[in-house]
Amino acid sequence: MKVFGKRTSEGSRQITQKKEKLKNFLKEKGLKSTRQRDLIASEFLKIGEHITAEELYREINKKYSDIGYTTVYRTLKLLNKSGLAAERVFADNLTRYEPLSAEDHHDHLICMKCGSITEFQELKIERLQDRVAEEFGFLAVSHKMELYGYCNKCKDNA
Image (cartoon, rainbow, N blue to C red):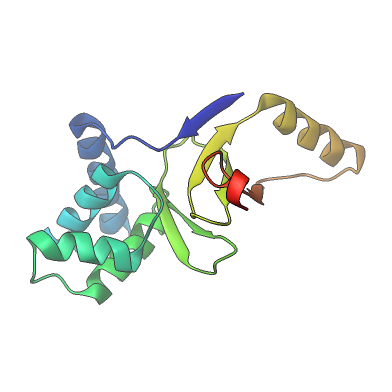
């Protein structure tokens, strides 16, 4: 099993490549590549973890007070549509965004006390899901798995 724990932020080369992908996506859709979108994308990719639009807005607003919440929210939606971010809604009903790459499938362990999110990959689980789908003649194209419970720090006080 591969456990990711906390995501690390993207390196500057990866950020540049992903921002280029966003620019190409915007051009294909007939949308403008703006300074604000570029700054928001950079900050989002640097942070590199599950984040709400509000949390990202607060981080960006510390450096760029001219960027509004709506611009942050809309840019996150564009990052999602371009395949550079995934939208996640966990049990707390907050929409979070996480950076994605093409080969970035993983599942989540979510602590119900402190809210920590641990990402992991387990090939046995992936193979079992594929086998179940095949047995039912089902063509699975995606899935998500979220396990809710208590992390090591919180489980004794649960």
